[in-house]
Image (cartoon, rainbow over all chains, first blue to last red; front, side, top):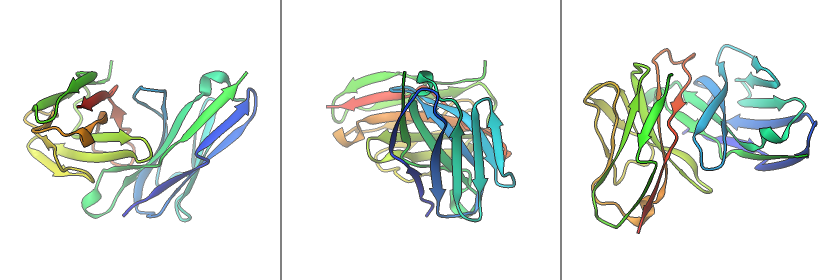
Length: 115
Length: 114
């Protein structure tokens, strides 16, 4: 059964810092990995999707990498801003067996960027 | 605008009173699913559907039913709600390209069962 772990559980940084969020998964049979953002009480917004054949994806100040063989992904946020404060969720889309198409989520990293 | 809509957004009900949470998507997606989100447990899949009339159980299906009579709609039915079904529920949809398709999520339904 796929398990996804995110470290750290919470992170508080001053504005302007570069930061890294970590995600690890146990089963490398995946189609893709997605990073989502969730604001309090709101839905999930997709930030980046990395296909299993890719190594990284970039969008603005965000860069996500994927090392499928070691079961790891990182989300790099450059020059953090208070508006980046949210919960960041990592999810993998399983490729194998009866779990086809299912997303397995990590517990999330709660990010606070203070002015 | 591409979107997944859910209704109602908030619901307070009592034990045993049947309810339905609706979900609709306008992107002609084949794949739809329901998740629940609980503190400390994260997001867990309840049911999913790969196309019309094709549904299957996720990780936590007990106490829930779904149907997929039309491609755009995927309602979640609680026949006899119980307090342990108090949670934040999300509907999601995606295409079937598997490696490239982003999952789109609805805004969530916060359900309280008294």
